[in-house]
Amino acid sequence: MDYYKLAEEELQVVDTLYEAGQYRHAIYHSCMCIEYLLKSKLVQISPTSEFLDGHDIINIFKAVNAKYKSNKDLRPVVGFCRKYFNESRYPASGTGVYTKEFAEEFIQYVRAIKNYIDNECASTVEGLANRFKRN
Image 1 (cartoon, rainbow, N blue to C red):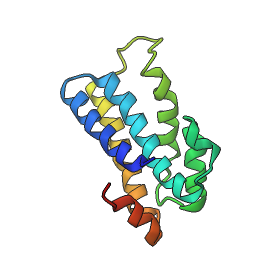
Image 2 (cartoon, one colour):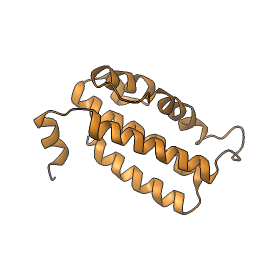
Image 3 (cartoon, one colour):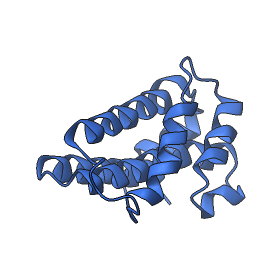
Image 4 (tube, one colour):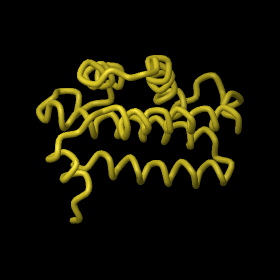
């Protein structure tokens, strides 16, 4: 599975939903995008990882970060994603928190994780070839 491509598709969805004013949905898809970005690196590190089959973003991040230390503390970003992945799908406390500003914050989280994956996680030649090969 090409998680990086899935992440790119999710980012397009995020942008579309954000522009349409669907902020709660943009936040949910931002969380999915972050998960796919992290999984795109995890699959290279550990192709049989049990975390590839679920949504345990905390442990996905820990596995990736154990191999590739981030220059920034991204744990709060991952923690917010963990919380709002489910909250944005099933907003028990209402939808008032899902503002334009909050969605913008999540889009910045996506960019921070994408920057980490793209620039801080050293790839092997094989990993780069797989990422950029044309299907």
